[in-house]
View 1: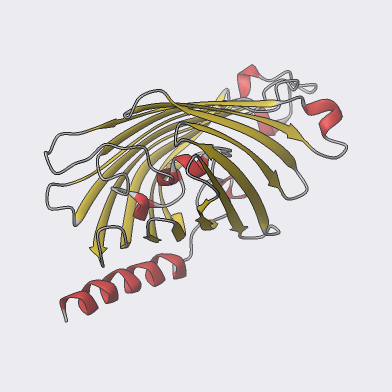
View 2: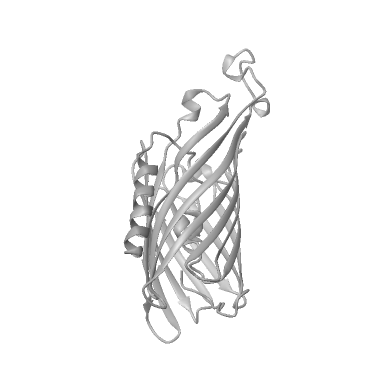
Length: 309
């Protein structure tokens, strides 16, 4: 009965958040999300079975002036009873003269079916400031009313939810991390403020090829209000749970190459190189993404060991 009530509560919360009339800012683009699921799904919190802290820097389309630049700090941990996990995301995203800075707080409730099989429900709430510095633009017509002010900004609260299941070899998650937004005050126009809501479905499986090698295919399907659905298809080869090398295809837009090394049981480092596809690739240049992750252990019951996802 308790399990049924818990599931019902989070199911209702998920439906209510998705059914509200509202929009959220476009999510930043990442290539190494399969190593840091918290940035896509709040229910991922606690899945490392210890406190995990990741720092990520991404520079996209390096040949273009004002191209996107993203910095993210994500941390999450299960509490001592293992049923509840908490998380925090701090992110800054710059595109041209516009900037989005946000802080997310995350709560997850975890149900264990065995030592390795868990189902988690997550809720997410955050604060963000979106701003644009028009005085940094080279405007052809200085009398254009669209650029009459030196800057424009607004603040908002946003809310999201997700569900995540994992076992020793398999995982799957469904989320809308910024499902609904409440604007606190704005000077942006209505068109600038109407940004789309994103939905994410992730899944993957780890195959053991030999005592030393594992193969991990995975996928991400991203649906965005008013836009076509996008799919990422990834394949990663693991050696001795220490070295990872992989390739990812983002539908009709990019091909990514990734590498990750487990420097110690607690510290890992990753890098991704993205090459745009199609006509855009001739002017955009490459994209680079760096990530560092450290797993802490504060409780004797925690075992900090490298995990496949």
